[in-house]
Image (cartoon, rainbow, N blue to C red; front, side, top):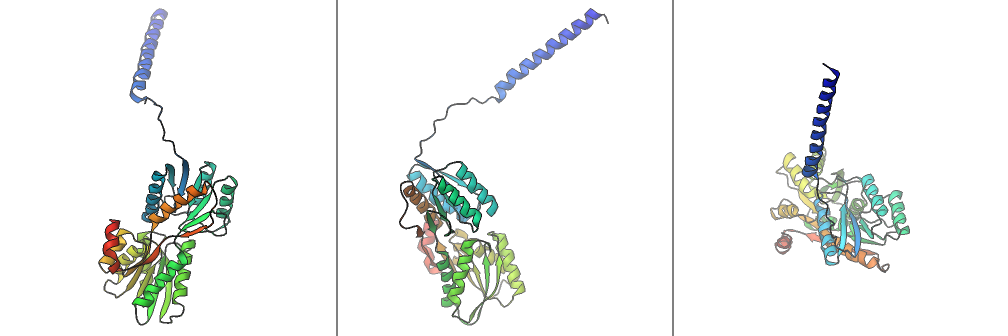
Length: 328
């Protein structure tokens, strides 16, 4: 091929390539470009963070629901963050991140240990008030605790057995996590309540990792290892549901007195059907609502009362008609 012909071929090829490239850029721009418009954001009075134990935990979603209700009423921007699964290290990292974000206040589940205490101190140094919710850490500089008196809740769980059973009671305890302060306090309250009743004996304790399947597995293991157990007590929200499933798997016809914790709809259904005898009722929506209200007050001044206990009580089948209807 002559040199001039080669040059012409190269020139034509280059023009074709250039035309295709320009066309690709133009039509690609038309296809994928998203026009940005300046969004007018709502003016909020404050930005608060609610740091939960676990993202999709039904109990924490109820806390979030109450907190959001208060936030909407008061023009607060509320940010809900949590580990996907309960993990103290991840929660502490989220806590540190919210401090770095310079939010106006942080509502967080208390965690035992110096790292949590240090982070609370770090926040206070930056004028970010901290409220512990559900679980308190009294040794920290938190401005307030909002939630259940967990020791008293444990005493109530003991009271259900004292008042509603006769004869020897061999108790299996299922707790959400052994390292959770609120669970430890509930077990301590339970032990104190039954201390003077020699007919009630704790046989064993198992951990559910705050999951329904974990409670089912723990129940199965408890009853397999200790067939004399005739009373089960759950210390976290999903334990009661899991205990019923575990009991059905290993010994469905056994006469068992079951005390659960919290008022999740499925727990109340199991009380209605006589599969759970009682539950310790705490009110997470009230906790969430109250925590935002208190945090608003903390924007102006410290509180005289820094420990605010929300309602706690024993709920049995006769208590359900009105309350269960309201929760639906």
